[in-house]
Image (cartoon, rainbow, N blue to C red; front, side):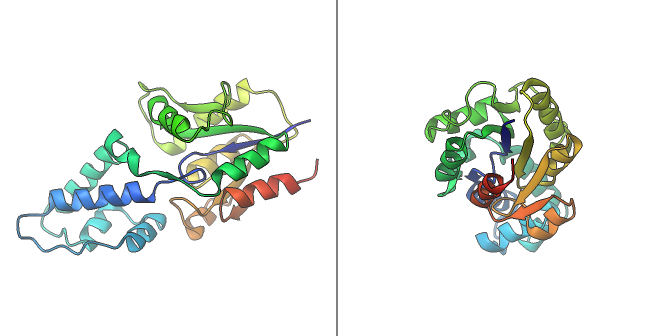
Length: 230
Protein backbone atom coordinates (compact mmCIF):
# COMPACT_ATOMS: atom_id res chain seq x y z
CA UNK A 1 0.00 0.00 0.00
CA UNK A 2 0.99 3.63 -0.44
CA UNK A 3 2.49 6.02 2.10
CA UNK A 4 1.16 9.47 2.94
CA UNK A 5 2.72 12.63 4.35
CA UNK A 6 0.57 15.38 5.82
CA UNK A 7 2.35 18.69 6.23
CA UNK A 8 1.36 21.79 8.10
CA UNK A 9 1.78 25.01 6.12
CA UNK A 10 3.15 27.72 8.43
CA UNK A 11 6.41 26.43 9.84
CA UNK A 12 7.24 23.47 7.58
CA UNK A 13 6.57 25.27 4.27
CA UNK A 14 6.55 28.97 5.14
CA UNK A 15 8.76 31.00 7.45
CA UNK A 16 6.35 33.25 9.37
CA UNK A 17 8.87 34.78 11.77
CA UNK A 18 9.05 38.14 9.97
CA UNK A 19 5.25 38.51 10.01
CA UNK A 20 5.15 37.89 13.74
CA UNK A 21 8.01 40.32 14.33
CA UNK A 22 6.45 43.06 12.23
CA UNK A 23 3.19 42.67 14.15
CA UNK A 24 5.10 42.78 17.44
CA UNK A 25 6.75 46.08 16.49
CA UNK A 26 3.46 47.62 15.36
CA UNK A 27 1.75 46.62 18.59
CA UNK A 28 4.52 48.06 20.76
CA UNK A 29 4.39 51.36 18.88
CA UNK A 30 0.59 51.59 19.05
CA UNK A 31 0.35 50.78 22.75
CA UNK A 32 3.23 52.91 24.05
CA UNK A 33 2.39 56.31 25.47
CA UNK A 34 3.81 59.49 23.89
CA UNK A 35 7.45 59.85 24.97
CA UNK A 36 7.32 56.50 26.80
CA UNK A 37 10.67 54.69 26.49
CA UNK A 38 10.42 51.09 25.29
CA UNK A 39 12.93 48.27 24.86
CA UNK A 40 12.18 46.91 21.40
CA UNK A 41 13.39 43.31 21.25
CA UNK A 42 15.62 42.16 18.42
CA UNK A 43 13.99 39.74 16.01
CA UNK A 44 16.17 36.87 17.25
CA UNK A 45 15.28 37.54 20.89
CA UNK A 46 11.57 37.99 20.11
CA UNK A 47 11.37 34.81 18.03
CA UNK A 48 13.09 32.71 20.68
CA UNK A 49 10.59 33.97 23.26
CA UNK A 50 7.75 32.99 20.91
CA UNK A 51 9.28 29.57 20.27
CA UNK A 52 9.58 29.08 24.03
CA UNK A 53 5.87 29.96 24.41
CA UNK A 54 6.51 32.98 26.58
CA UNK A 55 3.14 34.75 26.90
CA UNK A 56 2.25 37.90 24.97
CA UNK A 57 1.76 39.61 28.31
CA UNK A 58 5.33 38.84 29.37
CA UNK A 59 6.73 39.85 25.97
CA UNK A 60 4.96 43.19 26.30
CA UNK A 61 6.44 43.77 29.74
CA UNK A 62 9.92 42.76 28.60
CA UNK A 63 9.52 45.42 25.91
CA UNK A 64 8.84 48.16 28.44
CA UNK A 65 5.03 48.24 28.30
CA UNK A 66 4.72 48.28 32.07
CA UNK A 67 2.03 50.91 32.63
CA UNK A 68 -1.32 49.57 33.93
CA UNK A 69 -3.27 47.80 31.19
CA UNK A 70 -0.58 48.08 28.53
CA UNK A 71 0.43 44.43 28.43
CA UNK A 72 -3.22 43.37 28.16
CA UNK A 73 -3.84 45.91 25.39
CA UNK A 74 -0.75 44.67 23.56
CA UNK A 75 -1.91 41.05 23.80
CA UNK A 76 -5.38 41.84 22.49
CA UNK A 77 -4.11 43.96 19.60
CA UNK A 78 -1.61 41.31 18.60
CA UNK A 79 -4.32 38.63 18.45
CA UNK A 80 -6.48 40.90 16.30
CA UNK A 81 -3.91 41.64 13.61
CA UNK A 82 -1.33 38.85 13.46
CA UNK A 83 -3.47 36.82 11.03
CA UNK A 84 -4.85 39.80 9.12
CA UNK A 85 -4.28 40.30 5.42
CA UNK A 86 -1.82 43.24 5.50
CA UNK A 87 0.78 41.17 7.34
CA UNK A 88 0.76 37.96 5.30
CA UNK A 89 3.04 39.72 2.81
CA UNK A 90 5.93 39.19 5.24
CA UNK A 91 5.75 35.39 5.06
CA UNK A 92 8.46 33.72 2.97
CA UNK A 93 8.82 30.19 1.66
CA UNK A 94 11.72 28.29 3.17
CA UNK A 95 14.53 27.91 0.60
CA UNK A 96 14.37 24.11 0.80
CA UNK A 97 10.59 23.73 0.53
CA UNK A 98 10.12 23.22 -3.21
CA UNK A 99 12.93 20.68 -3.52
CA UNK A 100 11.60 18.70 -0.55
CA UNK A 101 8.05 18.65 -1.94
CA UNK A 102 9.30 17.61 -5.37
CA UNK A 103 11.31 14.82 -3.78
CA UNK A 104 8.39 13.39 -1.85
CA UNK A 105 6.02 13.72 -4.80
CA UNK A 106 8.54 12.19 -7.17
CA UNK A 107 8.79 9.15 -4.91
CA UNK A 108 5.07 8.51 -5.37
CA UNK A 109 4.15 9.28 -1.77
CA UNK A 110 0.70 10.79 -1.25
CA UNK A 111 1.07 14.39 -0.11
CA UNK A 112 -1.51 16.58 1.62
CA UNK A 113 -1.46 19.93 3.40
CA UNK A 114 -3.28 20.43 6.69
CA UNK A 115 -3.38 23.99 7.97
CA UNK A 116 -5.22 26.33 10.29
CA UNK A 117 -5.26 28.92 7.52
CA UNK A 118 -8.60 29.78 6.00
CA UNK A 119 -9.22 29.17 2.29
CA UNK A 120 -8.70 32.85 1.44
CA UNK A 121 -5.42 32.85 3.40
CA UNK A 122 -4.08 29.68 1.80
CA UNK A 123 -4.95 29.99 -1.87
CA UNK A 124 -3.05 33.25 -2.64
CA UNK A 125 0.15 31.66 -1.31
CA UNK A 126 -0.43 28.53 -3.39
CA UNK A 127 -0.73 30.84 -6.39
CA UNK A 128 2.33 32.91 -5.53
CA UNK A 129 4.68 29.96 -5.12
CA UNK A 130 3.02 27.59 -7.62
CA UNK A 131 2.20 25.08 -4.89
CA UNK A 132 -1.07 23.83 -6.40
CA UNK A 133 0.90 21.10 -8.18
CA UNK A 134 1.70 19.55 -4.83
CA UNK A 135 -1.72 19.97 -3.23
CA UNK A 136 -4.52 19.37 -5.76
CA UNK A 137 -8.21 19.06 -4.95
CA UNK A 138 -8.78 16.55 -2.18
CA UNK A 139 -5.32 17.12 -0.71
CA UNK A 140 -5.95 20.48 0.95
CA UNK A 141 -7.42 20.49 4.44
CA UNK A 142 -7.97 24.01 5.76
CA UNK A 143 -10.68 26.11 7.41
CA UNK A 144 -13.63 27.66 5.62
CA UNK A 145 -13.63 31.44 5.56
CA UNK A 146 -16.75 31.53 7.74
CA UNK A 147 -15.55 28.94 10.26
CA UNK A 148 -15.57 30.05 13.89
CA UNK A 149 -12.24 28.93 15.33
CA UNK A 150 -12.18 26.95 18.56
CA UNK A 151 -8.41 26.86 19.07
CA UNK A 152 -5.68 25.01 17.19
CA UNK A 153 -5.62 21.97 19.48
CA UNK A 154 -9.32 21.42 18.79
CA UNK A 155 -9.49 22.46 15.15
CA UNK A 156 -6.42 20.59 13.87
CA UNK A 157 -7.78 17.20 15.08
CA UNK A 158 -11.06 18.11 13.35
CA UNK A 159 -9.15 18.57 10.09
CA UNK A 160 -7.37 15.26 10.63
CA UNK A 161 -10.70 13.50 11.20
CA UNK A 162 -11.95 14.96 7.92
CA UNK A 163 -8.80 13.84 6.10
CA UNK A 164 -8.82 10.29 7.46
CA UNK A 165 -12.48 9.91 6.54
CA UNK A 166 -12.07 11.20 2.98
CA UNK A 167 -8.73 9.80 1.82
CA UNK A 168 -7.97 6.25 0.69
CA UNK A 169 -6.19 4.01 3.22
CA UNK A 170 -2.39 3.78 3.21
CA UNK A 171 0.10 1.53 4.95
CA UNK A 172 2.03 4.32 6.69
CA UNK A 173 1.30 7.99 7.24
CA UNK A 174 3.01 10.87 9.00
CA UNK A 175 2.19 14.44 9.92
CA UNK A 176 4.90 17.12 9.90
CA UNK A 177 4.18 20.17 12.03
CA UNK A 178 5.73 22.79 14.25
CA UNK A 179 3.21 22.93 17.12
CA UNK A 180 1.47 20.79 19.69
CA UNK A 181 -1.73 20.91 17.60
CA UNK A 182 -0.11 18.80 14.88
CA UNK A 183 1.16 16.28 17.40
CA UNK A 184 -2.21 16.02 19.15
CA UNK A 185 -4.02 15.55 15.83
CA UNK A 186 -1.62 12.85 14.68
CA UNK A 187 -1.68 10.88 17.90
CA UNK A 188 -5.47 10.98 18.08
CA UNK A 189 -5.76 9.29 14.68
CA UNK A 190 -2.72 6.99 14.84
CA UNK A 191 -0.66 9.07 12.39
CA UNK A 192 3.06 9.17 13.17
CA UNK A 193 4.10 12.61 14.35
CA UNK A 194 7.17 14.60 13.30
CA UNK A 195 7.79 17.84 15.15
CA UNK A 196 10.06 20.23 13.29
CA UNK A 197 12.19 23.12 14.49
CA UNK A 198 11.74 25.52 11.56
CA UNK A 199 8.57 27.02 13.06
CA UNK A 200 7.10 28.54 16.19
CA UNK A 201 8.07 25.96 18.84
CA UNK A 202 11.52 25.01 20.09
CA UNK A 203 12.69 21.51 20.94
CA UNK A 204 11.77 21.77 24.61
CA UNK A 205 8.17 22.78 23.88
CA UNK A 206 7.71 20.10 21.22
CA UNK A 207 9.19 17.44 23.53
CA UNK A 208 6.43 18.07 26.07
CA UNK A 209 3.97 16.48 23.62
CA UNK A 210 6.15 13.47 22.79
CA UNK A 211 6.16 13.31 18.99
CA UNK A 212 7.73 10.20 17.51
CA UNK A 213 10.46 12.38 15.98
CA UNK A 214 11.81 15.92 16.33
CA UNK A 215 13.72 17.03 13.23
CA UNK A 216 15.18 20.26 11.90
CA UNK A 217 12.86 20.91 8.98
CA UNK A 218 10.79 19.49 6.12
CA UNK A 219 13.91 18.21 4.35
CA UNK A 220 14.76 15.90 7.23
CA UNK A 221 11.14 14.78 7.50
CA UNK A 222 11.11 13.85 3.81
CA UNK A 223 14.36 11.91 4.22
CA UNK A 224 12.84 9.99 7.14
CA UNK A 225 9.72 9.09 5.17
CA UNK A 226 11.74 8.01 2.13
CA UNK A 227 13.97 5.78 4.28
CA UNK A 228 11.09 4.13 6.13
CA UNK A 229 10.42 0.46 5.32
CA UNK A 230 7.47 -0.52 3.21
